[in-house]
Length: 290
Image (cartoon, rainbow, N blue to C red; front, side):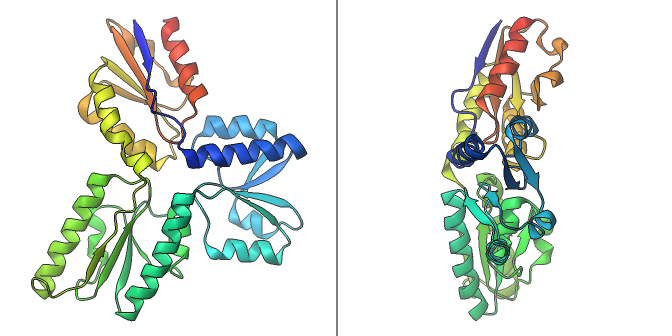
């Protein structure tokens, strides 16, 4: 049985940078706080916690003083930096450059649309770390849309400025954007409304969709490796599943079931932007042991 690991799966550059920064500091001091899970993969979080990485939430962060805290790739809202300044916390800012650029665009977009009595809208997962950071740029006035069903939240008599979480689906964004435009036209008449549609999806993420479609077509069974908290993982898993019904979502090697591989000639192992290469290799070895 052939077992192939997708060469293009695994950490995106933002996650690689955050983990490198964490490991550098842990090597020096043996202890480091991280604001939230450094990556949405529980196995990788456990590996780093054994090295001394302590994951904290925002309430715990507010009570810290005179220490060092890592900001992960997802980014943070402005008040996090304010708290750090007040509490003499040294921040190791590993925010992804793509996310930082988006935060700035959303802040400017909010200022612009507010002057027109309009709405700032973010296509993303409500409560997600990145989305929280983005909403924070708008003084928490942004409306978060996760699906077509959420579009009833909007007032179509007012201007709309639409952005996207960096790890969302390109197709999902397209459908959301088209439906908003249709409803604006219905409420105001053609060309009598203001609508800005900004596709701010990370291309390193979106380019994986066509690659995974081809990868999934070439194997009898697909093992998609991802943490359950990963928004990007759920999207890419659905991409694989859409072209290969024998796609299985696993978070660790213990989730593998031997029955999946009976009579199978080839297996493809792939993962999310938050999935470490070493974990895909571990899972590949277990499958080969069958």
